[in-house]
Image 1 (cartoon, rainbow, N blue to C red):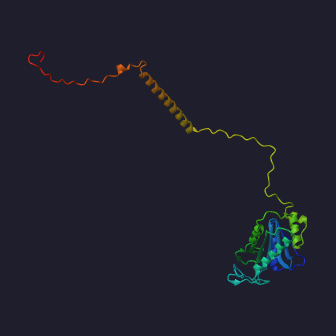
Image 2: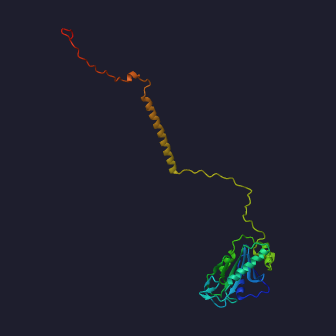
Image 3: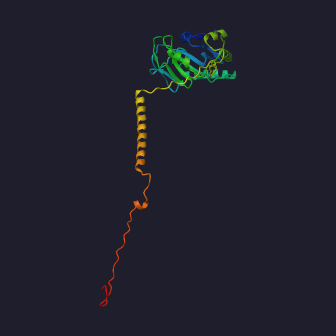
Length: 292
């Protein structure tokens, strides 16, 4: 990372160790240490291809280790003991950081630049060999506190590489304009290009170049059935042939049974009518009448 320090700056021991951490990072960025934006002194303003972060660097007056905690009223403690900083008390440290972020945003807006991707962080630099956890804590939306030194600077590196989710829009020209808007001395254009900043803004959705030769689309090879599929197809075919043969046989037998000359109805039908029996009435006979 490219680091620039104000010529007349007087850095504390914690700020010098913070500078050593930044110079050891391979990430693309520009760190302007001991800045003055308006009437405020800022520990550092770090510009990356994706945004800007305002950093306040604080060291310890004595060796303190343990669990770091920040209460809602603004007091900082380590394992229930007050945080003992080497330069100033921790009371109101979050508010001072927020005011610094606000000063940078106002300066960018006055220069007609986008101020959305501006964040802030407090970097606590403990004595070497002292363990302070957690190494990263969220203070407010867009504000964090980090614990780092030259021995353990892993969380600080992760923060600097991903503190902003903005697009990669900080090109060389925009970095130069940002430094001018903040009233800071900018490095040379060649140094920014060598550091890894883009000369032009990359396209948001790059379109691949069309190929001159488009290979013909080949149809997929036919799928050959396996042994089981062949046997199943043969069984279905044999069953269909037998079914057709059986139907034809039934039709032929039905035709052979029928006579080509139909019999008349008088021969095939029998009369079922019978005469009703007649009843004879008695006849009265006279004397000497024949047939009585």
